[in-house]
Image 1 (cartoon, rainbow, N blue to C red):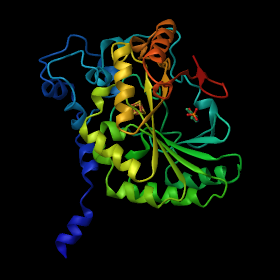
Image 2 (cartoon, rainbow, N blue to C red):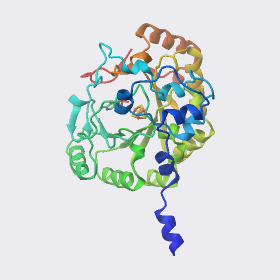
Image 3 (cartoon, rainbow, N blue to C red):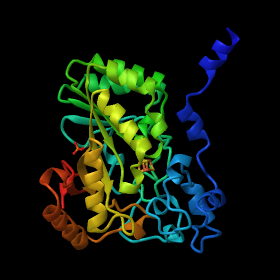
Image 4 (cartoon, protein in one colour):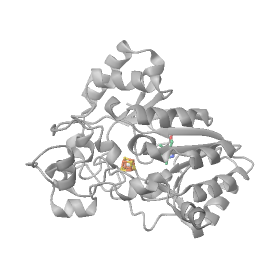
Length: 334
Ligand SMILES: *Cc1c(COP(=O)(O)O)cnc(C)c1O
Ligand code: SF4
């Protein structure tokens, strides 16, 4: 009896992994076998958007290589301290599109719910690194408001769970949200935008898969991976399980200088994704968020890469190159 109680109370593995994600620069450097780094961001920057990276993601980094494409996505460089003209705190105009607490609607038929500010990893180029989550988070007491906004707008066909990373919420909460959404007759699809299957594949466990299998809504999962090195066997298992649970899988990547801005890397990513049952969906031009200027790839280079991709891959493996523009009616092809 007591052991049963203890077992019931024990947190799922993914929550323990999330809790012990690396938050110390020194620990990260030690784990990837670097003694020091000459270009560490200021303390102010590191406090404002702290380092965070799960162990399983670190395990996929090349040891001793400061230019490793996974390491570069999470390590706060001194370049982040620089204030860049044309880079802003809210580059995609999310705040202007807030309809109700945590409800962002920019496009017809789809509504995006910012259901948490938490992420398992902190990607240094993230366009939400300055988003005021505290003021815009439809946590428990606000879900009523969110649900009634959707119920009152019959043009909404699809609800997108976003954040932060929506899969950092517990399965109890997600399952009850999914249940409530399924009661809205005009809703057809539940779409989840998450990087967790990539950065914390342990998250795809039986509890998550159970409520996904249970919902009568059509399920779309848009993962976020930028480099084939992120896609190891643990990720493969997680993605297969999502497919088995009836989810259609797509990927969105961000074009990042020094990480995936070359043709071979982009081809490898598309090929590997297709091996894992994922269709490449979008390749985003970087959103101009303050602190991320050093990741920018200029538009001419982006276009050339895209043209080259088209000559190298079948059309269905070429993601659409898009840019987000505040106030536009859709993401814009570049
Ligand atoms: C990106 C985004 C969507 C989804 O756009 P799709 O083109 O359907 O992938 C929906 N709402 C918001 C606010 C977005 O930023
Ligand atoms: S997982 Fe997504 S939302 Fe979270 S920090 Fe990375 S890019 Fe931003």
